[in-house]
Image: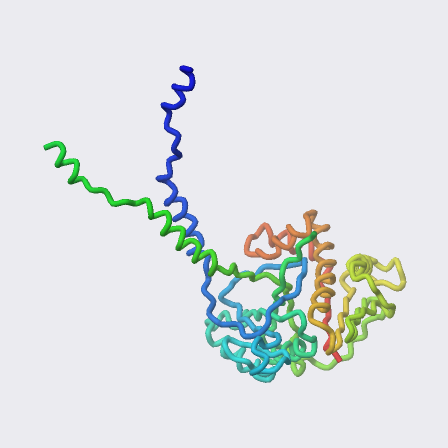
Length: 153
Length: 185
C-alpha cells in the first residue's frame, strides 16, 4: 500500500510551457520557405515524370513558360496554349517575351538566361518544337524541361 | 498586506498562445508550395541563320537513330522497339563501342545520339526517351568518376566548387554528350 501512496505524490503533468516555442519554430520555418506565387497559372499543369533530374543553379536567371490546355476551356478553347507571365501568347511572340525577360537582368547575365518549360504531358511535340525554334531565334539557348521526380514503387 | 501584493502581480494568460501559433502554422502549411526547380537540362543550337550550311558527313555507324512517331511508337536503329527501358543499355553500348561492333560507333567522341520526334508525338513520350538518353550518358560519366548516377548529377549541379569541376572535367573528357534533337516533321 505504501508504494501506491508514494506514486500518487509525484506530479503527472507534462510541462507544456515549451509547446508555443516549438510551434513558433515550425511556423517560422514555413514562413521563410513559403514562396508566394506571382502568377496565376491558367493552363493545366501535369508535368511528366523523369529520373535524371538536374537542379537549377541560379533562380534569378530563370524565366518560366507554361504550356498546356487552358483551364477555362469555355473561354479559351481546348487547344494547348503558351502562358508567359499572366497572358497567353502565340509562338511568334516568344522572341519579344524573351527580350523583355532579358531586360530584367543585368547586362552581364543576359546571355545566361534560362527558360524553364513547364509543359503538360498531353501537349504535342509540334507546339514544343515551335517554341524551341523561337527560343533559338531569340538566342535564349539554355532550356530546362521541368519534370517531376519519378518515384519508384 | 501580503495578500494585496499577491493580487497586484497579474499574469497574462498565455495558454492560448500555442493555439494562435497553430492557426498561423496551419495557414502557412496550406499555402506553401515548395518550388520545384528541377528538370532535364538542354542546350539549344544557335539559330538556323547563324550556322553555316555545311554538309557534315557523319558515318552511318556513329549515329544512333531514335525516331518517335505520332502514336508514340519507337523506331531505334531502323527497328521497332517496344520496351523503352532497353534504350539506356543500347545507347551505352553504342557510345562505348570503340569500333568493336561494325554497326556501332567508332569511338565515344564521335558517337551521336539522334532523337527525332513527330509533331504529333506526346511531350510525355519525348521526355521519357530524352530522359533515357541523358541517363545513359550520366551513367557513363558516373562510372568513370566512380560515383553513383545520383551523386554525379549533384556534382555537375555545382561546378563552382573546384573539386567538383576536376571530377566533372575528367569524367567527361573524350565523351561529349552528343544528343541531337532534330526538328520534328
